[in-house]
Image (cartoon, rainbow over all chains, first blue to last red; front, side, top):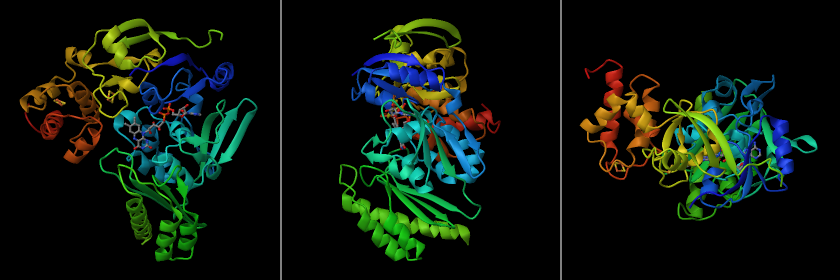
Length: 277
Length: 166
Ligand SMILES: Cc1cc2nc3c(=O)[nH]c(=O)nc-3n(C[C@H](O)[C@H](O)[C@H](O)COP(=O)(O)OP(=O)(O)OC[C@H]3O[C@@H](n4cnc5c(N)ncnc54)[C@H](O)[C@@H]3O)c2cc1C
Ligand code: FES
Ligand code: FES
């Protein structure tokens, strides 16, 4: 099958992109790295879009140190996240995630904003951002707004982004020197989407646990977090298995996913505490 | 609708060192453009959703999936395909190692495999076999079983690092 696009326009900057989206009469579709969108177009899952190519808007790319937080431009590519010294120091979870995402040629073009907007529950960055407690910065026809990551993912491939809005940046709290960040997952082959994945962030303010591939959105495991805050690892594992509702598919059964999620939590706790010792 | 969006897009780029001007359909991907419009049939279109790697080409110095980039996005780009990389002899040692080690049978995966391998080799040093396998994880080969491909790449890495006589 061959892709069908209604039209194509290259945005020079953010305001140009907003104009293009506004003029597309609801048919506009933001094109960032294209690593999910062009695949969907080739399979005709997405047709007749008026493509607004934002991939060359340099103001939306790069990582900056804002003092308490790191600001990551939506167009920062996976490969750039993996190699960025600020990310490696202050958000090692994201650097870790990059090595789990797809393959080199896809990481060379895929963007972090695209991964979040696409909202694949099996993708790494959405779950990582939940664990890190990110804030998303969004530009729309009426100006800018911010959304907490807990309110962003709505359903399978659905977010709180409106169709005339563009995700411009993500801010995350910078990890303190004693903060631990762990990503563990089970996948059959290198680069495959994980059957289950788990992020654990251990901060002075408490634990944050998120999961990928256990439902229609990435999941923040609040009950397990509360148990870990009390130092009860067994309780956290039990709470985690209880609060997730994974599905069965050709890749893995729901009960297998639930089982593995608990195992990953134990391993993540061991790794985080091992790192402290 | 006004003509803000084009269904045919003008692009001006370099392919294998030669300037190219073209007008491409908005939804055409890079591989169809290279194969059908420019007659560069080395890179293949196979799965067309990013999984197999047969379409891997170099754009602005990095490997990309030709099936997941639109030709319209190539304006100003510097593209290298297996044809150009062969003519310029940039990867001659790698090609010779593939032949010597029988690292191809039908050859369908080979152009993409070579572009992916060259990206790894260009980082310098002698990568571990596991790192070679990891880097090729997005390039499927249905014939060889990969062992010979990994051997060939490892050999070239050693040669280039001056550790083995060519
Ligand atoms: C073979 C293969 C394997 C993969 N494996 C993995 C994996 O293991 N883990 C993983 O996490 N990902 C994986 N991916 C997906 C990859 O990470 C994509 O790069 C990512 O999901 C989308 O980013 P993109 O920049 O390419 O977005 P695009 O494909 O350009 O866009 C995706 C969607 O998001 C919208 N969008 C993009 N940017 C914005 C923005 N700034 N504002 C508003 N809307 C926007 C688009 O309109 C579109 O609907 C894989 C992809 C392929 C092809
Ligand atoms: S044809 Fe592009 S990855 Fe298979
Ligand atoms: S040689 Fe036939 S697919 Fe690799």
